[in-house]
Amino acid sequence: MSGGVDSSVAAYLLKEAGHRVEGVFMKNWEGDDTETYCSAANDIADAQAVCDLLEIKLHLVNFADQYWQHVFTYFLEAYRAGYTPNPDILCNKEIKFRAFLDYAKQHGADFIATGHYARIERSSQQTRLLKGLDPQKDQSYFLSALTEAQLKHSLFPIGELPKQDVRAIAKKIGLANHAKKDSTGICFIGERKFKTFLNEYLAAQPGRIETLDGDILGQHDGLMFYTIGQRQGLKLGGQKGRIEAAWYVVEKNIKQNILIVAQGNDHPALFKQNLTVRNIHWINDAPHLPMQLMAKTRYRQTDQACEISLNQDCYEVKFKQAQRAITPGQAVVFYQDDICLGSGMIE
Image (cartoon, helix red, strand yellow):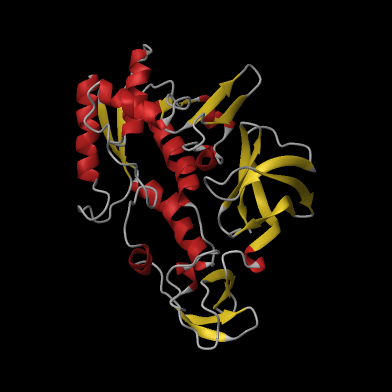
């Protein structure tokens, strides 16, 4: 129970279906808790109000140590190595569907449930992760590192509903949070000025900004603050003797600490047809490779046709069409129709 509308409606639907339901609010970050950022105090109050209305018990748990050890340290190490990580995927794997699941089992629960827009298909042979029916809200991308064992003990009550129906249900039953905005920002840390926040934990190393031809254009604030395809924050407007076109990050030279840029939203350097993955987590049995699948390299991207093969000690993914801004550290997630097969970190 995060205090948001999705988990609130999930709890309501479960109770209406006849389940015995209890809520769990997880506080997993011990940093400042002010109105400027995601206020845990306000979210707890919202979660408690929902539980009072639904007449269910609310547990308050703190997984801050687990979050720091299993999610945030990885987050920092990835940035230090020059990657752009996606902590939400690891957060789901290690906190929501491991620490929370363990806590629930210890308290006698048969299942945990969340407000994710995804579905679970159960049979005597397998438990599979499916996309949520609302294509605008499908969150299977962020659940792609879960195991079949975790899915067996999980429920996604709103996975077959569009977002507007979820809000309509919340309003109909009198939930005060029916219009509450969706949470964004870093998983469990919330919305904050990213550069300032990251500077608290990692020392920035400024360096040169160069073109693909090696021309020096300026200085970057530290490679960890930039990602492939980024346009904002480069401060390269009005370069003398050059056409006035927007600059984009096309590469990060980690060894030499150089940020490489090119002009134009559709510059060829922004597009790649291949990527490599060191390890792939398959939710169910690993498929026989090579294999034609669909994949996405970022959330909300439409599925892209590709072939995946095992090449010595890593996997190679070749897309039918070149993809824009493939970013090391992000996840490539694999699909077969509506079935989410698994994911790996882009090298």
